[in-house]
Amino acid sequence: MDTITDPPSPTWTVGTPDVRRAESIGSRPNQLPCDQHSAMNEHREPKSNWYTSFAYPLLSHLPNREHANEVAKLGLKLFGGILADRNADQPCLSTSIWGRALSNPIGLAAGFDKDAEVFREIGKIGFGIVEIGTVTPKPQAGNPKPRVFSLEDDYAAINRMGFPSSGLDAVKRRLESRTPLPNTLLGINIGANKDSEDRTRDYVVCAMELARFADYLVCNVSSPNTPGLRNLQGKEHLSTLVRRVQDSISGKNVPLVVKIAPDVTDEDIDDIVSVGRDAKIDGLIVGNTTISRPRLTSKHKGEAGGLSGAPLAKISTEAIKKVATRVERAFPIIGCGGIRSGEDALEKLKAGASCLQLYTSLMYGGPPLVRQIKDELAGLLMDHGFASVSQAVGADFKAAYGQASV
Ligand SMILES: Cc1cc2nc3c(=O)[nH]c(=O)nc-3n(C[C@H](O)[C@H](O)[C@H](O)COP(=O)(O)O)c2cc1C
Image 1: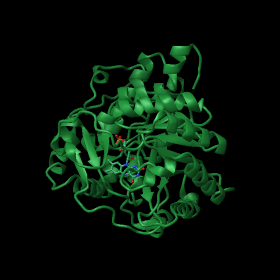
Image 2: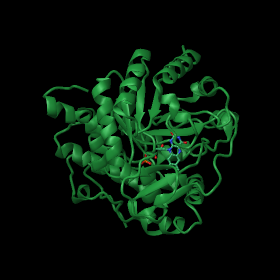
Image 3: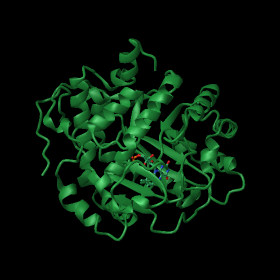
Image 4: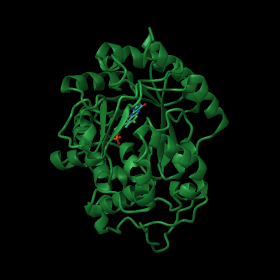
């Protein structure tokens, strides 16, 4: 069993995000100091715990990975209170984005809680950010099942879900009935129906209806599983899309973020960043699953769809670096792709990401992985001489050029 030893009593500053988070989940203030580095940082595997020893083996015997995700959601609904991370986050993990304080920079990426069923419970297991969606205007079934595959030997997954969504109205009803956790940012990721004749309008409709519930909105233009969707990343399309969505939420004061693919070419990145800077978007998520196929060994490696998890880590970090050099801190980058350890998290921060998201590693590591990554990241920040998350952001560039170029 995994144990997190009780650290020495922390010194608290009243009103820090850490304290507020601890209060919000009824926890005792209990934290590892940031300079407590241990051997766990040397490994990228989830440590042995109740999830890896009991829950994962059971979930992995279900007929397909999508069932396992549904059972995991049910587990969160039933046992959310027990699963809560009761340790406050280490002070060095606290950061901010769009003027909002976060007790840690780790978020759950879109795709797990597509229909806003468990966003509160997810916040409680220790994420600083929870992103729901992708939400489409009309309900749609998505692609035929099976459409999610575990690639266990590669610590990866392939999915071709195709935006199954209970639709805007159902999601709105859920959001009306449940408030998000006070110290967790709620992102709402929006998309277009497969059969839509005006995809841009779909984003506008979702943005208008959902903005009031969101701490930030994400235009997902990078799913590989809705034919043609990625074309919206092209300069003209993206520029129109962003401006129409911005107009539809003007005055609502909700940051608008675009989620891009990690497979974009250098030219695509030039175009996306120039559109983003011209339109003054509030951020980019880099990125979604990849259609590329690095060397894989698992049984399901030949399945069609987007690849996520460990094999994506380097690809997405490289994409973050390229984006960051062009963004020049005009807006924040949220780094996503293959994060399963504190080391992966630090690599993405140093590459230029201000906050992070993960999904696939949660399938393998379950709720305890969130605490593990946070503890590892806190130790590594100190090892590398960073007093805070924000000091690490873009450090690769500072080292290379002797100045903050991102
Ligand atoms: C089963 C599954 C479903 C996903 N669904 C969505 C989605 O609806 N919208 C979206 O923007 N990204 C979706 N994603 C992509 C993730 O949000 C994330 O960008 C990607 O998986 C890379 O992160 P990871 O390697 O940590 O999983 C999905 C990923 C998986 C594995």
